[in-house]
Length: 618
Image 1 (tube, rainbow, N blue to C red):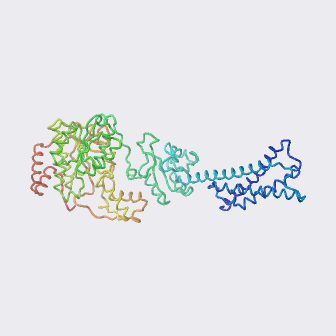
Image 2: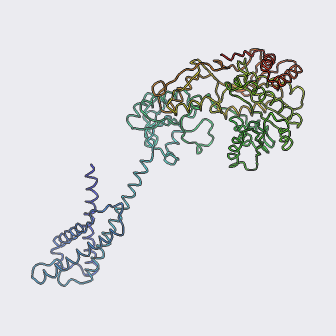
Image 3: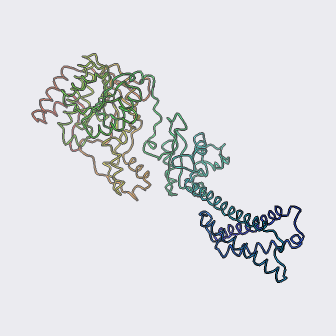
């Protein structure tokens, strides 16, 4: 096959040279002998043309004109071709003169006009060079087409609907161009039909066959509403064939032209349906107002900042004690929101500094996301949990009331429910503080409670990722450890809508879906890395850490729960408790911390949170 690929272009060029000889001969005769071809040529025409062709081909061989690489035909090659033609013509003329003198049959008549030789030579030269130039053009185009085809990744598309069809049409124009070689779809009416030049082979059971037949090394799932189980099944099949899985578009894509092929991630595997945000309510809540976000450089805080700017806040104040985090979020926001935000370095423990910031900007809405959230770390430093999460929140509330903030929304956690750790207990106290200060001020205070978010600072996800990158093992505390999970954008969008709903004193609880086994999460992450759990990466169980429990709850048994207009947001009606007693206990707690009296501090926490069952050796 390779030999044929080399011979065919050579034969084409040789054939072209013979055609060039014939064309140049007839053109010379036509232009010089206007009355028609002289009889001497007409009688011996086959002999003339054969002799001319042999001589031309012979000198092309001598000059190496058939050993050139056509895709790199250059000026140097033109010189060699010119030399070959001139040498061939010279030999023909000299041979013709000698033949005429000796009486043997000359190639041309001895009366042949000089103009004929000139026209024949120039025409032959032009046609020879043109043929080789055209060969270079064809070679270059073929090479470019071949490279373009090789650059396109052959893929099997799962989903022959609108997204799959769109991908078939535009795949070559994507950043990472793809070439659809076949479709898989679970709709029987599509089986055997073609979309473009790609056939719909069948349903899921044909995926093995599709990968074997086409040799595709990638499957693109083009079903925006693909369930976790489907993605997991596709992942398992692709693992056997050592090919990657990606997906095209999402359920929230409004403009098909904005859709792109992206890697399957944990958000896809934990997919619980789209967040249907009440855009009008949130926009009316945010637009044209000054919004302050404490902890604005953190995972939740930074996303709240992005969302507030997207919904048209008049000005955003990003407040955080993490100078590096402020620097990074500032660089990000500068690209699209220059002049719309301000960065302020401050600790929520510093009441005077908070007064300065609130006086400077007079925020109308405050999202309080600043908190210590790492459970084991707070178990090692319990006073810091109370200092920051409780006393820092008190500072924020007092300053907000003084500066007549309209709404103050604090971020809470599912760990506040029947807490076994000081962090969870501290967040439960902040929920009670929201209800207390709401009752004595014009500012509307509320809390929003939800579980873990994927990829947040301190989350198990980046921790597992680092362990996988190092080759394992992946450490899980307990085989039955379960947690609720949301994506950061989903949680923040719901926080915004809950804030818009808040009338004061509520504890909003976000619907977290079904809890996820942490061991399953670890296995999914290993598979997404192209590895096999327990084979390529070992999973080991290390036991519960201080303050941890196997399962986090989302609401207390004695809380009265109602649904809101958004089915993903629930509301806890305010509980009746002694606000004055709460204020005194928090004051005593502050004094116990000042005296570094941990036993008293823990006793006061227990007084405020009767369900606090602290056991450092959990």
